[in-house]
Length: 322
Image 1 (cartoon, rainbow, N blue to C red):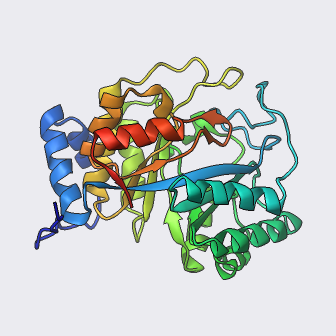
Image 2 (cartoon, rainbow, N blue to C red):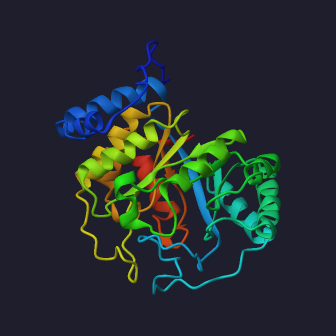
């Protein structure tokens, strides 16, 4: 079957507010999914999924105190502080990701932000991964002046910097930096001409209105993020959020649907927490407009469905790698 894009796309709203988005989240479940699926088809081929692989090039020892993160030095977790991977190790991981069908290779480091010496090593990694024909993405924390430009010159395509949660909820999750710090880094990324990968985490004891607040912040970025990862909290022993209540699966699917409605031209990615979802829930997420996944056995330090399981699920749903 050949996919045909409708001639009249869904018009983007110029600005969203929390009341509007909360109302979307509260629509009858099937109606919400139907609306999201319609909009998805106006911008994307619904049979195609973008595959990204994420590798931690520097694990543990992070000075930030993010309540969800096992890599923080503030939390007593099983994650140890490890040295940075070598360029050869990163390139080999990228080759394997490409062989498995990934189109984008993401590199993450547990830093508040890269020091100049660290950045120089990552620039070589970006150049080598780009030379393999993969899209490149990095998440290195807060950037200083000029660093985004260096990454761009090395061949970086995307920079990931998540907002995590709504502004009013942020101080409950992180105390070592401000919400404005994140927005400042996103501004530097845009100014350098890089594409933005920016999303958040749900399941951190937030309310539905908090989730609406996060989506409003993302949807009102100008321009909207090219990629929007939606993470479902993975509760890790030793982190402050290990005892968080479990988010009902329908609320997660609703979040995906509203992300699609409010950011119609963005790739909406199923990210952390997918291993804990059954196949039916993931299928509903794809119906609701998700069209990107993290692909590979591990996401930084937490588990992810293995490649074979993902290939089997995509075959069942007649989905194909972009």
